[in-house]
Image (cartoon, rainbow, N blue to C red; front, top):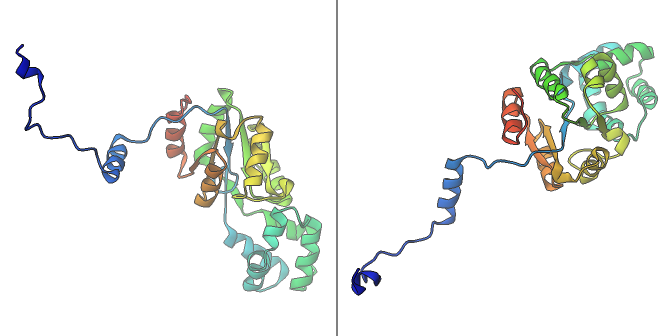
Length: 239
């Protein structure tokens, strides 16, 4: 080969580096990268493991108390009684007493308990996946904003909630609610893992973002099929 052919040609067009926007477009076209395999899986309780309807809760309590639904909604949500329960700052008995006082009802505790709990039902679409994960011995836990009353009801009413999980990290026990970093630190400690060794799914985007900010691999729950894909991408043999 002659010397001239080894020299760069003077009229060679320089290669331009891609712009940030072009790099983002390229990564999107390539699809999400493979994620590391987690050592422990956490699931939210409400709207992931079980379904619920707050409208039904309000209607049932209003009927039991003989009170307007608007008042019940105000007591539970607008004034934060539900949040106080889920933070462990109010016991179930204190709830009954305060609810009776605010609504002027003399309804017995058993009737109020039924009204305040029987608004949950199983999320049937996720059950086959949970059974498969348990059969393959993947460690699993529940990470939930909930109160003692609702936790005890779900644990007793739905066998899979009580039987398939190794840990339960619950806001009323921790004294902090998602997306507070404190409850995610408690989840890591309970699992005996570093945060980046955990996987978590929640139906609320703010909770997913809070978990991610705490170093946890987290995704928003959009259905069992989507979740199976996320777990497969992390090397878990499911589906």
